[in-house]
Length: 491
Image (tube, rainbow, N blue to C red; front, side, top):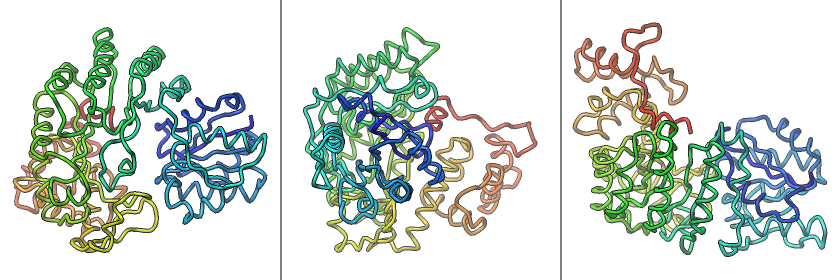
């Protein structure tokens, strides 16, 4: 084995689609190439030891916002103990502002952008000469038909134990300035028949959870319908062994043909991630986001009322021009539409994104360390931004966990954002913690808060008991999350 492809995934259940694309397209070097994945949090010395056990001549690392700091330590140690090993970096985190990064200084070569074709070429030049002169290589983007699909490279263990990531297209036609996809010229589809043949192969091998990473799944409705029909056919043929598919939808594009297809899916088979990000038209204009808010709201409401899809809808706090008050208005509007989850995100300054053009006019201040979260802006000071960060964390624990189904609507009342912000402030003041809050303690704190805000103690206890039983009691076991949500959370 000559070339090792590696990355540090956020969880073991995540399998790197990017590494498998590289391996699929290694050509004559494929037989000399192997994948070895790690998980963030592993000891640096153990990672380096396991890498060197393969005696590689070249190690290619996939660098992302969630692993750049830990991979920096790995690369630094690797170059100390085995300087002869050539380190090649790729991935979104090193594709922009490349010269400013310590990990780039440590590495031998960097490939920016698409690496499917350029990485094998760089490896061939390193091994066979002449060695590349330049350290940084701009990735060549080939025609989509020339890319070899990687799905046969998911192992049986991957299929059994990990999320299977797939893509029917790459890129995005939209220009939202907080997103790396803003730099894409358009969306490029793969041949749909070849893609579905690969999905057929995965399904035949036992894959049942498919997570599409396409940024715009419903942009081409004909393609969307073909993909959904593939899964509907599998469900019809094996109703007791259903698939589970996750798609990201453009919120204001849901024609009747797509609604008809969506309505055919049974419970526990379909999840949609929908990025609203902001309902504020002025903010949308500032960040170049084109969205018909009324259509988006109507579509979310229809999906919640007329489909069995699990709805995961995103909002971002800290965008230029967004005040706490306008964000609260959008949050309350979204809550009223009824999605199963509201993903409360905090703006991040991803390398290369155009959001930085608003830095001076809106006083944007970002953490210089990954994940580059916004710390303050002209409308939201640091202390208030930290309150929003805690809101997001507690919202995941209480609302998105699915554990407080009956309690949550009572806790939120008529003003969801304001009520939960008050609860969040109180919870932090009384626990001084945002992580490692045991479930029984959290339930007790929710019960105390309800009593604190005027609910009779017995009524609060009964309400919590309908969702959750304190440790050691079995009279009222909390209601488990629906199957579709449980499978999503596990992924």
